[in-house]
Image 1 (cartoon, rainbow, N blue to C red):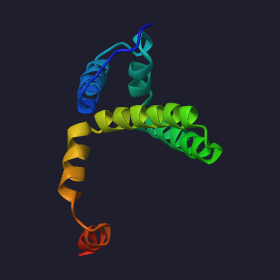
Image 2 (image 1 turned 60 degrees about the vertical axis):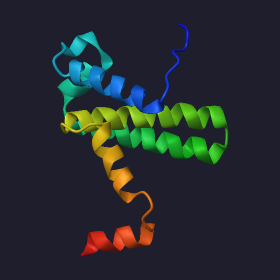
Image 3 (image 1 turned 90 degrees about the horizontal axis):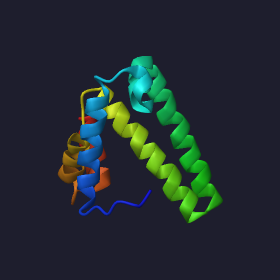
Image 4 (image 1 turned 90 degrees about the vertical axis):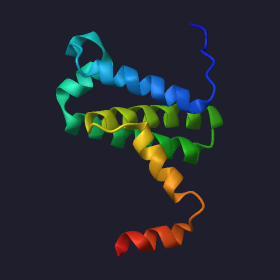
Length: 113
């Protein structure tokens, strides 16, 4: 299968978010994601945790290809989690945009108040 060219990168997130929404109504046996949704939030969260661990291990190993592969898995399963919680990539991107240009220390301190 040929790689698909995307630009800009947020188009990938938006396209994937649309597919993940569609999978909510799909039969569990029809796709991996539909099956995850059918198993419930705990199963989705377990996958996010597994992928986070695999990403950390890949980073410790230092192989750039493996880091990219595992990070893609982590991001994918995080997007599934967001969709299961009726959220999407724009919600996270908007929060990151809100924080952009703020000191991380100041932003963190503001959350405590």
